[in-house]
Length: 281
Image 1 (cartoon, rainbow, N blue to C red):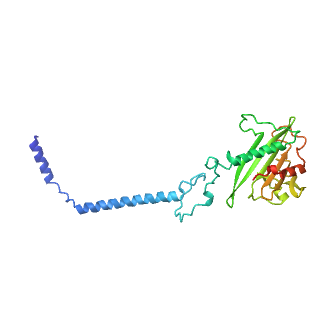
Image 2: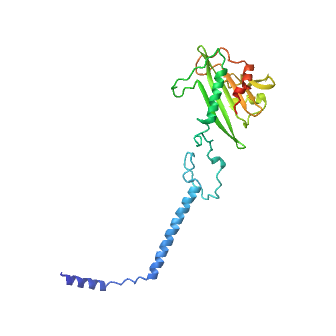
Image 3: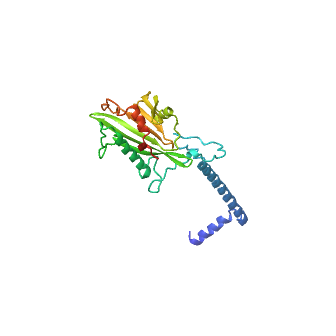
């Protein structure tokens, strides 16, 4: 078959085929509009679903820390405002002008107060005891012989409330015990009565006596209750609201031989609680 014969055969075939209807421009536009509307509706539904998931905290997956998947609610209802408890804690500004990483001050005036408290505690250790020094590179996890910390406790009426804690290991021969001083700045919510205040130290209870030092009354726990992390401790609230705890223990609790006697008598402990050297402001 040559080219002319092929063309003739095609013309004959097409003549016998029903001609399709002509394409209307209006019909084509209407069809295009319908397709576009369907697409917009579908995308709007997807967008609404994404928005609901974002607002409700991705309910279909589960809230962080939930430990598993939670079915999405069929009707999420109104979205409540953020809870104040979900707001990240704002830590005080450090000496570098940036917020602290956590409650503990690692530089600046607050940190220096903790160092000062440690120095004052070492200074009152009776001469019959020694205070060992920490090694240059203490092993990880090993308690420090001399330790101090300044901790932010919160705010009250716009005033920062801090607590300072310093402790030392006291040694007599091969026997070891511990002394500790803890100071809470003005604005703390600790008790005001001598013994109720003293029993608030670390949540420990015990047999408390009121010791009169000059014109002041100081609470002293002379025997602990079920919690015996310390053997005795005293507490005093200064007129400006600053609270001082002084505690002593005849043992370290790590298998070391314990002291044969506590470094201070109850009256001496009470006197130290009211001593101005521990009155940090």
